[in-house]
Image (cartoon, rainbow, N blue to C red):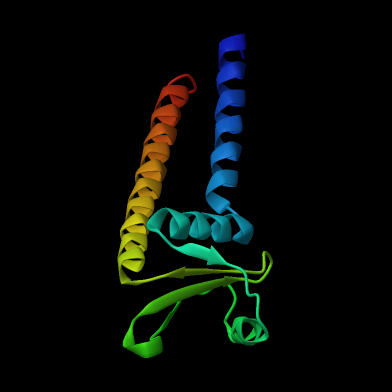
Length: 131
C-alpha cells in the first residue's frame, strides 16, 4: 500500500466518523437547535417572576411546543426547564417556526444525500485499485 492509498483510507475513515458523529447528534443538540429555530422565528424568552407564573411554568411539559388559547388568542409556549425560561410566540411566530423547521429538514436531507454520493464515489475510486 503506497502513501496515497494510506492517506485516502485515513481521510475516508476520518470523514465517516465525523459525519456519523454529526448525524447521530444528542438530545441536547436537538433541544438547542429547536430553541434556535424558535428565536429565529420570533419567539421571545421569558423567565417566570411571580408565584402564578412559576405555578404555570411547573405544569408545562418540558421541551414540548404547546398551544394555548388564553382570551381566545393562540399562544405557543415551550418550557426549557434547564434554563428556567419559557419561549413564547403567537400565530405568526409559530408559522415561521414551521417554515424554518421544514427548511432545516430539507437541508439535512440534502447533506445526507450528498454524503451518500460521496461515499459511493470513494468506494468506486478505491475499489478499482483492488479489483
